[in-house]
Image 1: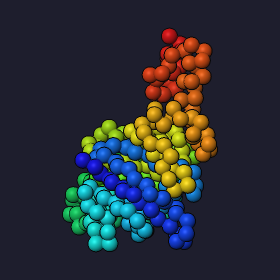
Image 2 (image 1 turned 60 degrees about the vertical axis):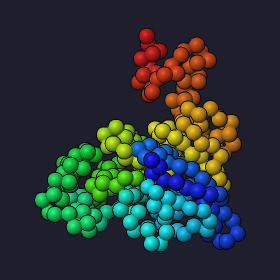
Image 3 (image 1 turned 135 degrees about the horizontal axis):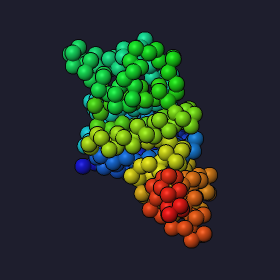
Image 4 (image 1 turned 90 degrees about the vertical axis):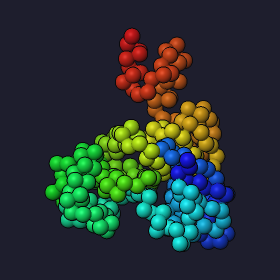
Length: 271
């Protein structure tokens, strides 16, 4: 089943220049897809179109077989969660617990069930000890983990991460990437769409879509996309460090092609 269908979509802010130009792609249910490109590439505009925050000039978007329109957008948003770029803009409650409760209250979840849900999803992201904390006292990584807990508590079918690690320090980015990997393993049929300019983050996904000047220029699995090193360099995108390291070691007759991380590379070299 397709979680998301984007069919020949175009959009212009000024009526002259297309921010998104005839883009088409599908995201299968349960898959993790990353849309990558630099600022101005059109990727964030595309995210807003998928959420119904902007109206299409041309084309069609379907979310779980429902055509996106003014009539259907509220229904579709019941199935879609989003984690935004700035963690400070995502909190409403005075404490983390209050914030997690807000969305559940809007859906009229009974109080006792709400408490169980809050604890369950705070635990999933390692934030169960911070439920009484004020958001202002949390680190950037903790804030994004809390935001993810709030989205998960609503039990969406699709979660969009819109530059969710771009304002975090390396430690915070590592925290969020770890949660992403855990979500993929633990939550069956959850579909993830990551909007990012971070090639390292995109490498965690099942499929990568590269956007430049409003158009798709590359699409495929990470391995397939990373084979086009020259094309990536043309649009100022670099290969992930792990891929570059593997290539450098291969030139020295070290075969670490099946290593999934730096630790595995180190072990193979030491064998």
